[in-house]
Image (cartoon, rainbow, N blue to C red; front, top):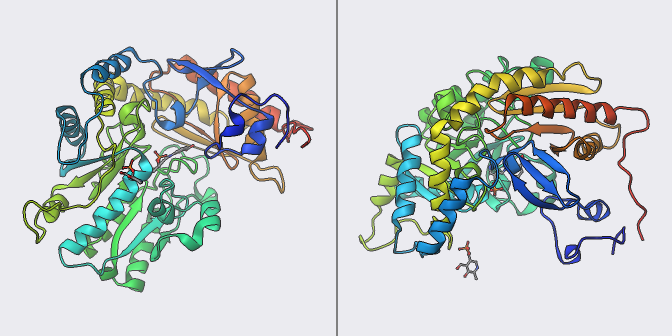
Length: 456
Ligand code: PXG
Ligand code: PLP
């Protein structure tokens, strides 16, 4: 038993995700409502949603068209098996998603989350090579500072050190990692794509030379790394990866769980950068976070290869699927979200990019700010850590942010911003000014550790 006496009801029965449970018990934070770009805390405070939920609610909360789609669908067909059946609403959503994707990515396999999407993509990649007689292609290549969720596959190709330290021994074998592309000495305070670093894609050639192309199934990258602090790709980097993959018959997988559906001002990052992968994962924004949904977009040739499998036509070609693959509520909400995105909100995200860029780079002269990066409606601010206490500085900013009316997100000593597409320029300005005050607070003498009650 830990800490304060006033733990919220039910906390002692809960194990919270990606949360320091002991600290939370000392400083619980309960969200009880949300409207538009604001959450409400149990004590009545309103908080601006600086990361659109966890990057997943760009259209704001309690969106009337989404509520209507959800409730109408619940009355009509609330759940249906999608094994040996299909529903018109999920089929038409797949058609719409494929229509928004780069040409050639024509098939959608639905999952419920980004983690499931990535693990599905890895299985498709391996299965594809196997079906076409190249089952020796078992290796996957990820990248340092990549985040691909928490499934065994996604964790293995991911490049989060703490995860790797704890779970390394039980990860997928045969995974290598490219270097991450963040080099503050060369590209601190970049606006958009850094000009330095395109050559890092050539590491893939080195790995091909080391292992031989015939052993490598796929390379997986986020076109813009999101979770580990908004790392836009260096100029030319993704193009080079594409070219090397094509030359060696290696599949290129883009994880667009954060970058998809408008975050970078385009349907997908692939279109912004003009690079088309063979497989692409999505989640989050497709349903505005309201009902879980994710998926994989596959190229026609990958799908056709599975369909050419040497088995009777009544045999299942890809032995994979979730109880909740393409559920009707998610599909209905997905349609409503795509209506809103295509009806001006992706354009709005694009037009807000220079506004956010100008504002966020206005923080560069604050004491303790060591880097600022941005792309699309996303930005990150790196803070000088408290010596010997990684993460504590950003935690202080996060706590102080609550007093400034901000729901901030941090990892390590980086604050990430991904405001809703419905934000106004004034709201973005208020967010940055509140953040500026919270940063100043965190670097004041004597600030530092948020108060930590003694353990009982
Ligand atoms: N791939 C990418 C690129 C992601 O960003 C996942 C896969 C996993 O998705 P699920 O739906 O299984 O969580 C993600 C998730 C943050 C943050 O603070 C980011 C994510 C999740 C939670 C927090 O940046 N990304
Ligand atoms: N575990 C058991 C015992 C199951 O029966 C199932 C699905 O039927 C699963 C796990 C997988 O669950 P899901 O399809 O929701 O991923």
